[in-house]
Length: 558
Figure 1: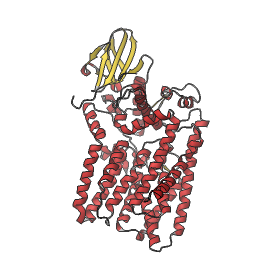
Figure 2 (figure 1 turned 90 degrees about the vertical axis):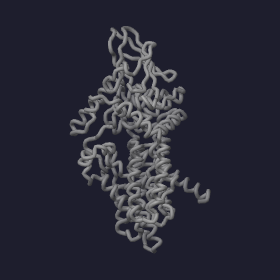
Figure 3 (figure 1 turned 45 degrees about the vertical axis):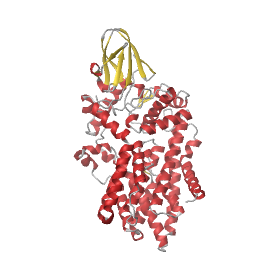
Figure 4 (figure 1 turned 120 degrees about the vertical axis):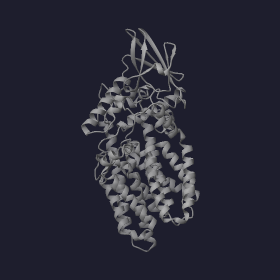
C-alpha cells in the first residue's frame, strides 16, 4: 500500500476512534468509575510513583493497594502497567489518562480488525471500515470504554489472533503460518492479558486441527512453523509464565474468585445495561451478519464457511446455550474463565469476517447485494451512535451523582462528603483517590486455610457471604492505617507504630518467601516471621516504639 493511501486509511480509523471516545472530550474531566477502574488506576498509580520517586520494584506494590507489598502488577500485564504509569507521569491527571487509554484501546481494535480483514482478502474500502466500526462498538471493546473491564484491552488485540487463524485456514496459500505474525500476536496478548491469550489460542488450536485434516500436503510445514512460533512466544513471555510458576511454587497464591454460577454471566442479547449486554443496535447487526452468511453461504469458499461456523459456535457458547455450570463442576480448571461471555469477541470477529466475505464475493459473482450493503451501513451507523449515547450516559453520572460509581461490586469507600470522589480524582495529589477508595481483592495473596476455604465455589448465597468475609478481612488488615504510619524510601517500605506491651502483632504487610524484614534495626529471617490472617505479617515486637523495614528480593531457588 503506497504511503499516501496508508495515511488515508490511518486517518479514517483515527476519525472512527475519535468519534467513539468523543463524549469524554466534551464531558471535560468526567471519569468512568467502576470496581475495575479502582483496581487498574490504583496499580497504574503504583508504577507512576515508582517512576516519579525512582524506587523501582517490579514484584510488589509499594504505593498502590495501600502499599502493603503484595503481588499485582508482576502477574497482571507488567509491561502495560509500567507504560500506563509512564503516561500518568506525563499527563498528571486520571481524566487525561483514561481518555488517552480509551482512544488507544479503540484505535488498536479498529486497526487490528482492519488488518484481520486484509489478511482475509477483504479489499472493498467501505467494508474495510464497516467491519472495524462494528467490532469497536460491540461489548468486546465498550466493556473497557464504558465499564473499564480489562477484557476490552485484551479484546482490542484479539483480531490479530483471528488474522493468524484466517491465514492458517486458507487452503489457497502456499504458506499458512507467518511465524513473526503468530509469535508477536501471542506475545502481545500474554503481556497484556493472559486470559485473552488463552481465548485467542483456543481459536488457533481449533483451526490448527482443521488444517491438519484438510491440508494434508502442508502438515509438516504448518507444524514446523507453529512450533517455531510457540518457542519464540515462550521466550518472549518468560517474564509472565516463568515468574508466575516460580512465585506460585514459593508461596501458594490465591487465584481470582471462582464464580459459582457462570451460567448467569453470558451474553445478554438486546440488553442495554450490564457488562455482557448487546444493545439492540449491535445485536441486530450481528444477527444480520449471521443471517447473511448462512443464507448466502454459496458466496463463501469452504474455508470461509468453516470459519463462519466456528464464529457462530463461539457466539452460541457465550450466549448461554451450553451448560456452563455443569462443565465448571466437571473441569474446575474452567473457573479461570469466570464469565462465559469472555469468549464472545472471537465469535463477533469471525461473524463479521464471514458477512463481509459474502458481500464482497457476491459483488464479484455479480450478485445484487447493494440493498444488503446499504442496510449494513445503516445498522453500523446506528450502533456507533448508540455506543456514543451510552458512553455519554455513563459519563454523566460524574456530574449528577454525589457518588458516581458504576458496576462496583464490593469496594472500600471512606468518603465523608458528597462529591468526594470527584474531588479526589480532580486533585493534583494523585494519591487522593486511594485515601477514600480501594478494592480489597484476595488475588495473589499467600493462601491461608481460611482463605482457601472461603475461595471455593458454592451457592450464590454462600458465594456472596464468602466474598464478603474475605473482603472485610482484607479491608480490616491492609487498609487500616489507624495504628501504623507508612513511608517508602530507597526501595524499602517503612512502617512505624507504638505498642503497649511486648507481644505478637499483625502488621499490614503481605508475607511472601521473598519478603525481607528489618525490625528495629535487626534483620529477621522469613522463618521467624509468622503468616497471619489474609496472608499478612505477624512478628513479635517490644513495648513502645517499633519500626519495621520491608523490601522484596526475587530468587529462583529458596
